[in-house]
Length: 280
Ligand SMILES: [Zn+2]
Ligand SMILES: [Zn+2]
Image (tube, rainbow, N blue to C red; front, side, top):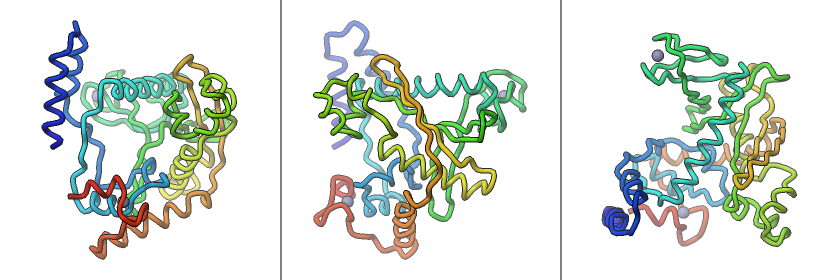
């Protein structure tokens, strides 16, 4: 099914009356799939209200995720988000405040530290920030924060979010409605991080706490950038485990089910949801 859908798109890309875009589309479709792991629980997924325990059980047991290649439009959105992340991370790197894992673009080895100037393996000076991995091994939760900042007041984590009309429709439909679907007006009315971002941030703070104890940052700073005109906002949030306690409890339940080898029912809907419907 999926292979043929991809093939159809591949052929369609060829057919269209494009000077260059068709070739770009085909290039993207030939690129290997992203290597995002499916055998761990991702904080950004398990904080969602429609996170399906049954589907996660299936993936943790080695089930394969059905993945369609994103459309060119969606790929544009992903790549734009990445570019905005890299821009902010690079600023903190240049300032000497960015802490974490850096990957050498030549020898591919990792240098860990605070804005290192060069690769400690080959001495080259082109390093790419590989962020900070945050894990709870026993709960099989694994994620990355966008950054760990040292040397500007108390240490903090950062979470960078590029905001578009789609983000508002998904995260804050009320805000958009109140502004009569005027994006700029809705943006002006954002006064705190969106709920899912808050939950994600609290997950990272708690995971950092579990890994680094007293050395872990106690707050996270959200940097929002509006994709339409590059306006920005900043919000600081203090660690508060209570906000995500239930997410950790739910993760424990799923891991218990995996260890007991007993597939849980769908927790989203009585007759299954669009995620666990994908289980063959
Ligand atoms: Zn190197
Ligand atoms: Zn389900």
